[in-house]
Amino acid sequence: MNKSLAPIILLGPPGAGKGTQARVLEERHGLVQLSTGDLLRAAVKQGSALGREARTYMDAGKLVPDDLIIRIIADWMQKPEAQKGFILDGFPRTQAQAKALDAMLEKKNLKLRGVIEMKVNDPALIERVCGRFTCSKCGEGYHDKFKPPKKPGVCDKCGNTQFVRRPDDNAETMKTRLEAYYAQTAPIIPYYEKRGILYHVDGMAGVEEVTKQVEEVLKRI
Image (tube, rainbow, N blue to C red; front, side):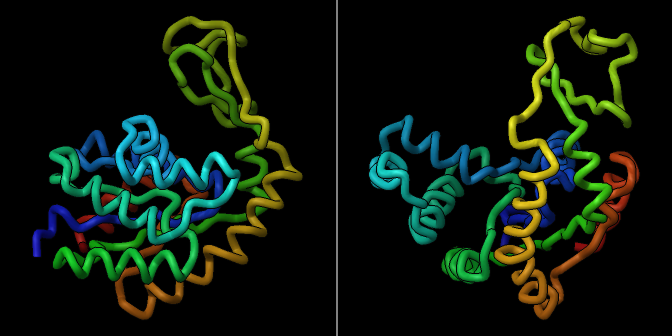
């Protein structure tokens, strides 16, 4: 088995910091952060056969079936950028997706390298998410309480004075998203735990500390 091709999964509720850690892994290890949403949009834009199939569902406002998402991931894995390995962030979301992913990897003589769960404290997570905003120009992230710009109203990185907040970064929406996560995605945690490939990090620690913990996991897998 080519271990370098084996994917890593980052698990955790919205706002746990999966995207932040995925970007660090990209920079440090040359891994590619794989978002199924981005993959679907790229396939549709390219007009591939899989993209055209996905578009029929998306245009109808329907969820793209699991088997089609898996086929799109499998197709992407043939590309040169996939050869150093990749990180799945936000997928799988259900046990059915987890099993379908395993079946696809098995056909390619691959296994998951590891699944890293970012454990969080819900009330603290809601506070974290509800206070975050980004620079509209360079995308630098900030927080009302934990990381305000050094000069109020001015981006530290590029000097821009316009910031944006995600419309779903509010307490009510976050509670709904957390409920959905615990109902749909959390049940796959025991699935990976039984296989001995689940690892835990403290998602509520500072970014650098979480990165340190993730790096320690990578040494073990």
